[in-house]
Length: 301
Image (cartoon, rainbow, N blue to C red; front, side, top):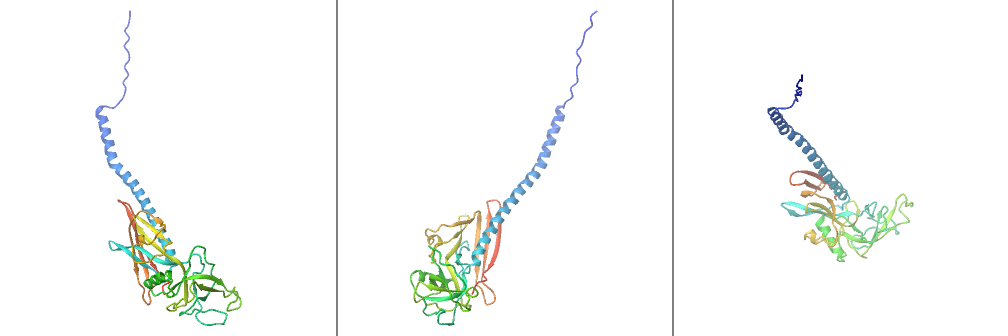
């Protein structure tokens, strides 16, 4: 007798179509709700990092500008080239970086026949109290005495370059550290003799504190085409646009991503020194930061 063998059917568990649709709907809801939260959090982190980078760029630019302003010749700062009411250029004479003591007191009265005081009306050399380095090769050095303001100083600069013998600024021909000094020991009271390139230069007046300021010429900061630039090595300080005056001087990049720039100079009064307020905005089409700082020009006369 033969018996029939029926194959055993195994029941395989799985999802029904309805269950699968429900799962897909739930996942879609979770993605719609949680996805933007995660994406926004990530986007916020990226934006914060970018803003921090711009702040760092702006602070670095302020630091370099502050260093130059701290070593500027008194009353030499001017701003120009307004765009939408904001000045985009600041210029000033910077004290010579080649000199450890670029501002020294000069001798204003006779002490002994062998010493040399500054004669305002007609002079070719005078003494300053301190040690100066020798003149750097290939770079002209100038000395400024008591300029009353940038207009007069810039005018005198142009006259000096043209060979004029009068004005608050004169080119230096040589620097010699004296071997005999007022106290007898030059290590204790050093004196340096300054000889001018003109044998009979006439300074208009004394400095209030009998100070002489040594400079290698002007320096400019300019906001142009999304960049803040520092420019040196030019001599033209006329009232024309800076771009037409710098000649072959190559601007040095200070920072990129500049969207707005403003230099605002405020003159000083009897008990308040002049100031330069700088506003610098950095960013792109969607994000940005703005920094403002006021530099006190404490070396003003």
